[in-house]
Length: 276
Image (cartoon, rainbow, N blue to C red):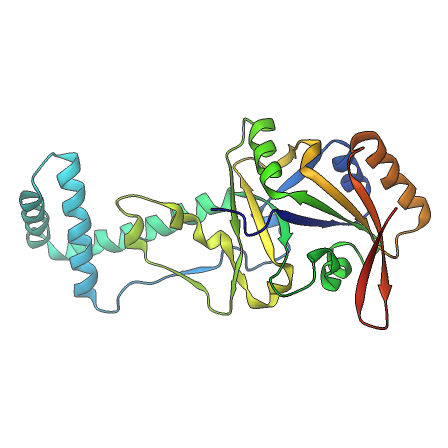
């Protein structure tokens, strides 16, 4: 997928880990269980309430498997699947539900091994995301932290070039008040990108984040190229002593990066950024 915008933002608190990662030109990919939303990877398996429809679907899946694995014609494969059903219908139905449970277990296990680095996109018809008050309050600890602005394309390219041991993907998060639905029959013959769809859905209450995710097969720090970072915004409540630390890191490792100090305009509920 193409990036909706090339500007991505990462809000961070001022602490040893965030400063060390910044100086090392690295970001942290967290395992799913470490994320702050306990509803991560929520989804529901949905099959037809009519068992005969599920049986017909399972026959179809079985026929495709027979056709490919035994090199049978489509007609022959369908007849063989029908014969298996007729031979022991109760066992066939039992195997069908066991297959559904196995697919669910395997998918949950696979999704649980993913690791995520979360960023934020500019939200259409809203101010640039570095002005998002809730993000400053929640992720930059009441405006005392900082915000990194990345180029999405350069960040992805550098993840892939600097972290050869990792498989890197990405997705935009969609928000809904309805749990994502999954039909387990979809994945009995093969899997596609939709297999990982649960990672891109969150509840509507998180919509303010405008989240865009990078997904890795490996947990921990991932290097990026210095030119992927474009700007650094300092929180309006960051003490001057801490500002000097960020400025020193920027000067040493990111001499091309523009650093901005934010302030608030109480006459219009706006966050203002001034280049240092």
